[in-house]
Each structure stands twice: as C-alpha cells, then as structure tokens.
Image (cartoon, rainbow, N blue to C red; front, side):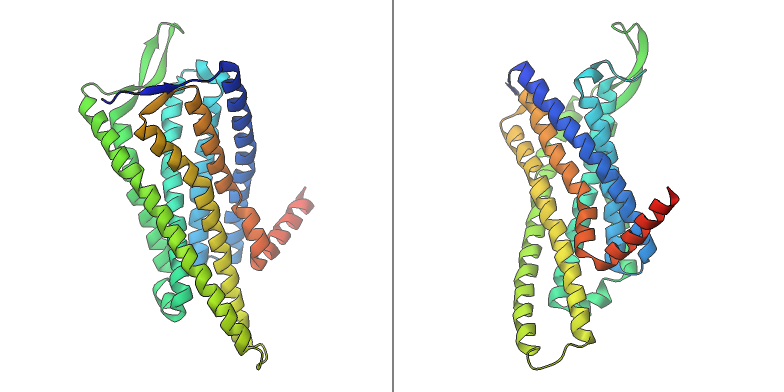
Length: 329
C-alpha cells in the first residue's frame, strides 16, 4: 500500500470550522430535502408528459437521495458522535452514508450531463431532437443510469463489511465496519480503480457539461440575433412564442449545469490533490471534505429556486400548491 502524509491544524480551529460548516450544511440540506420533495410534487401535478419533465423528476430523486445521505454523513462527522449511535459504531455509519452519497451524486451528475446534452442537440437540430429524445427515451436512459451506477457500490461493500462484534471500551457488542480478511489485494485494486475511474470520470463529466453549455450559449446568441433581425418586419406568432418557451427551458437547464460544475468541481480537485500527494489523514482533511460536501449540498438544494425563477409553469403550480398548503394549515 502507498505511504500517506498528514495535514495538521490547531485542534480548536479544526473543531470550530468543522462545526460551523456542518451546521450550515445541515441547515441547507433540510431546505434542499423539502425543496426536492416539492419539485417532485410540482412536476407530478404538471404532468410527466415530456422528456424534460421525466429527467427533472429523476434528477430531483437523485438529489433527494444525495441530501438524505449527506445529512447522515454530516451527523456522523459531528465531534460528539465519536461514541456512535446505540449499537452502531460511527465507522459503520460513516461507511454507509459516504458511499451511498457518492452513488447518488454520480447519478445526479450523469443525469445533468444527459439533460445538457439533450438540450444541446435540440438547439442545433430541434426537429430531430424531438423525434429522438422522447419521454420513453428519457425514462430508459435515466433508469439505465441508476442501474449501471450500482456497480460503484459493489467494490466497497464487498471489501468492507458491517459486522457485529464485542467492544471492550463500551463493554457491549456493536456494529462496526471492518475489512474482510485477505483483502489487501482488493484494497490495492480499489485504490488503483479510484485513481483511474473515480477521478477521471468526474472530470470527463465536467468537460462534457462545459462543452455542451458553451455550445448552447453560443448558438442561443446566434439565434437571438437572427430572430431579432427577422421579427423587425413581422408580427409575433405562435411559432415565436414556442421558440421563446423552448429557449427558457434551455436557459434553465444551462443554469443547473453551471451550478453543478461550480459546486462539484472543488470536490474533485480536492480528491485529486489529496490522492496525488497521498494525504488521507490529518486535521485539515475533515474540514476540507466538509466544505466540499457543503458545496454539494448547495448544488442539490438550489434547484427549486432556479425552477421557480425561470419556469412560469413551475411558478404557477407552486403558487397553487402553497395556497392549498396555507389553507390546509
């Protein structure tokens, strides 16, 4: 196994920043959980009748899963959780929440890439895109993403196992995470796969996202200039209204893509730096990871605000839902 280095800070400063970041993440995460539940209800009331809505519902489900597991991860990371919960050691909880969160974050990333790619194609070839990216097509692609990425969970859940053992410190049997016997080779393989796949693929996802977003913005500017020159001599018609509606959807998805890259890129950079420098321990590590997880929490929590600001249909349904909730209360 490779040798590792430690990064140290003053213990008081470490605990202060860690607590502050975790409390912020828990607060934002609770808002995000409610927001994504609201998103799912909103899209359901709109009617899941097109590829965009199918993808947005799927994205909301993955972000909801990411936020729930992040809430658990943040709770386990609290300093007072070092004693565990009941008959469960913190290592077992940390292991479960960490990898489940990684699964949902990766699902969310690929769904965002698919949505951005779909809109990119629709900008350049609108008629062909409508024939290719149907509601059924979106449902199949999103389902495949969820199923295929389950492979991400197989190596860690095979190498590590949650067992029930006696703890001399607590004088009772508890659940804790441990490495399977004779798993040194598997651990080395996991480390190599992490360097090759778990770092390379996220950067590839970011590259596709940035490329598609750049192409969309460039094409939208070109179309806006052309439409402005054409509509000077003609009255607005239903086709122009439809084009503007489609443009609003595209801008909304581009905004989601930009937020995704801005919030998740720091985590990948941290993983890359720590992996290259072989740093996995020290006081700075939990603080740094907590900050990047806070950014992930923000990414999964702001979608309802983006939808409300940029989608008139979402806003209308949201107003009715909030009015009904107010009357109920």
